[in-house]
Amino acid sequence: MRETALVALAATVAGVVFCGRAAQPASTPPRTVPPPAVPAAPREKVVGGPYVVNVGPRSATVMWIVQTGQASLGGAPGKKDNTEPILRPERAFFTGLQPGHKYYYQSFAGAAGKGSFQTPPAGASQFQFVVYGDTRTRHDVHRRVISAILKYANPDFVVHTGDLVENGDDASLWPIFFSAERLLLRKAAFYPVIGNHDRNAKYYYDFLDAKPYYSFNWGSAHFTVIDSDIANAAPTKAERDAFWAEQTRWLEADLQAGQKADFRFLFAHHPPMTAVKSRQGDNPHMTALEPMFEKYKLTAGFFGHDHNYQHYLLNGVHYFITGGGGAPLYDVDLPPPGITRKVESIENFVVVKVDGAKARFEALKPNGETLDVTELGP
Image 1 (cartoon, helix red, strand yellow):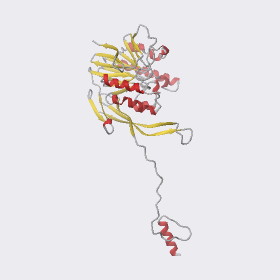
Image 2: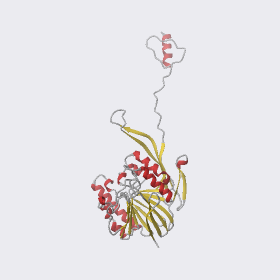
Image 3: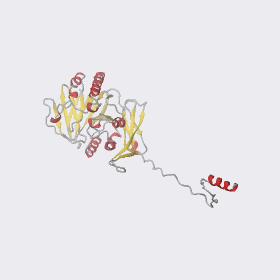
Image 4: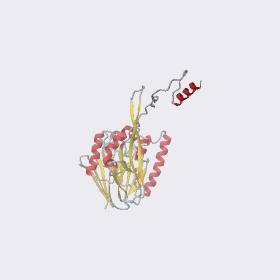
């Protein structure tokens, strides 16, 4: 009995328990069964950026987008009807910068993680910015417009007039947008305007570290960005009305505070007027702002939404519609009489050169041909 018990104890210590009569010790150690295999963690990759947002005279945010994996959805087990990338924004916030300086950065490893940006100068100075929008579809055209900006302009920053992607809630579209913009955004700060196709999506705010409306100064100019997409601003009419009222109060205070600037520029997605017959009267909330623009001596407003080029002059305020960044073109079939300076159904972007109290606006086609030129100042 004692011998049997000792053998059973030894077998238990070895990790093997026998029922009944104890087995004799084996000449080789027992085989260890490996644990179940654990799937390897998905390999992360950068799918957007780097790019710089919220650039001020003393601070800036460098961002890039990382894909950590993908998720799928199907109507049956094992079926993948829809697959979406899992994306994560990364950011580095820099402070203690100097106004009017150029900075070079390394965001992630390798040459692709390098870029540069300019901080806003203080007071009267020379600078250049580019405005374009509606890049949501026809990605080949979007890339041509970006290539043309790189070839025919040298902006310190760019302003996008909205509809960056076809559906802001679709994660798969954002890497396409950032791929097309990559070379431009590695050298110019980016200021976005939210459009109706951006859907007030969380991705828009997360990937761009953005707010629905904001303002900034660059040199002797004041820049105001507003959210004209009230249809997506909130789920109920009461909330949408409250949002628009609050933003309008902020807008008037902002324009009033910018009266000492040599130039006041405003950016929104929806225009207050249009040469597209089927869209005339669609944006009464924007048309209602025209008296405010005139009261506070707005220099120019820039808009998208209509996929073409339009330029109007109404009571001293210039209105530019530059929605030719890639989305299908719209006809300009009924230009408003008395205020129309130039309309054309063509892809385009606008280059603005500021030199102290002078400003030059030049609208260009992707082939470099000039569409329209306006010069302001002494």
